Image (cartoon, rainbow, N blue to C red; front, side):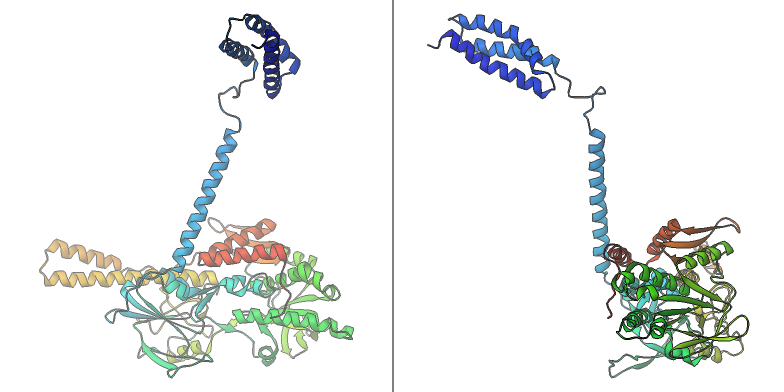
Length: 581
């Protein structure tokens, strides 16, 4: 049998360390824990010295000792009875729920965008709408029109829509060209009825016989390349071409900035100029010429390209071409007294000061007279002629009517007398062919500025008109059927009232949403209209963030928004690419 002394020592070895350990866990001094346990140990010795006590008595004493120490421990909860960190734990869980929900929603729309539904085939009994072009007006029309009551045919030399406000960013690699194009079939494949899309050039419009002739001019052609089709309604939205003011050298030596291939051509020629200036043995005069970039046109396109070009030099070119980057100069030539005539004077002065800080020269009241492969001949405000050598010339000096537009105007000589473009009425109907032809966008000569904003609103308006006409036709068919079935007078009267209401088509009304432009160094300007004739004129970094968010929201698809955002993030991390394709 174990002696009482040994058992007492064993108990002390068990009890004392356990009490000290528990006290230390809750921040209590070990001496106070030992003092509080000492009377308990004396009581335990009395029980242990008694030979008739069993081990269950020892367990009871240890439990009693633990209950004496327990009230001295701090409570695990705070004064309100809530666990510490509960708010942040709930916040974290909420974040996870929102993140997973957003990711699931994004995945759903991505899946939906890649899986178009089945469509109704075209119905020969339905009326045919032929849409010429795939720009802002045409794409807005296709996006909003209900094709259930129409057979829609799209004819355009490009099988995509180009988001032109971000085109200057493609010229220096800020954005990839494919990020701002939306294939036309990504829009038409989600319509109720099948929409035919032909990548071809329209050659002739016959408003008398209501036919359109188009030809496939691609490098690869089939046995049939030229086709003539009839139409019931024609939507003319072919846009304009670059205005050269009769200067032959512009077409030969300048780069335009209107189409996607124009931006890619500018980017390649820019890198060519830098690489050629880096060749060993190049004279100083030739280096200065090669590194002089001239932009003609002080509108938003010219301003934004000059700004993007200067950003490219300061952020990327100076790192990879330090020997020549500091010599690169940018000059903007404008024939009018001011740049950006559609903006307020406050923003014009702000843009001029920003360009001055970024070493961009602005030559206003300078008119281009001639262009060759090395120099731009300009007429100064004093009347003198001056040659400006250049390595890259970008022409953004306005637009003019396309040859197809002039041909259509010639076929309606009495009604079409405006040389600027097609004349339309308040319902966007072409004068001289009001029963069958509608015209949209830059191809028209209206009181509205030839902007993407105006063309987009016109396309949406015309889609509503066609939808209303479709309802009108359906109601007229119902009325005829009701009359054949000898319907009662109340039903006939109700259908007649509905027809009368559907026949009232409101005229187009333009709503100006403001003007935006990027001016470089992560700054932008904005003229935003308020109630009445008031406007907010804003410029700076915050406006630049608004500029980006506004353009991302204007993109037509989730795919384009994702690609543009990814390109901006890629440039933020790695910079712009300086290789030549």
